[in-house]
Image (cartoon, rainbow, N blue to C red; front, side, top):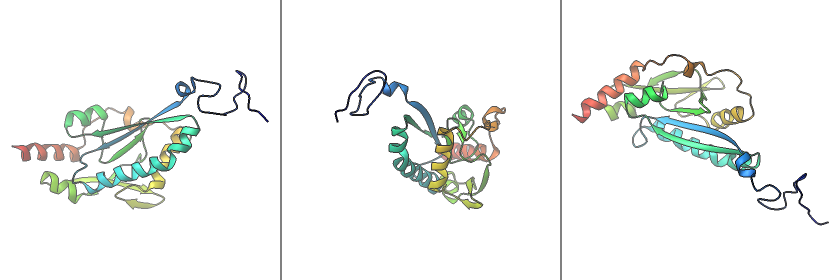
Length: 181
């Protein structure tokens, strides 16, 4: 049987078959990875690796479903950037502006403390009743898929509220400024 292409049906006989504008019809999903440091902070480096592995696992599936992932790695290394991105804790992964972990829980982060020379708390992720300093891959993939397939219908109240720089981040940025003097 011979494959045939026409405007009313697509046979998927080759890439670009039938509809040369299929790329422009892809649904775009923005993934923002916001972090304080990728050179010393074990949580930020670990989250970066987990995000990378998660994307490797699902990119082909999402591409086949017509979804284009746009990845933004943002080093929130100043108060101005923290305010611009309404940064609440490090590390943070947002899918289309929604944090994969709406609840912000933190504990002492030795890496960031060593980096700035002061005690600093960083994010702890809660997934299926357990706490993780680095989000599990399943949590990241689930967060992406929920956003892609419309399961996340709740509004992201965190980003809609007036932003106030958290004291913990202010403390980190102030300590980093003093360290540079």
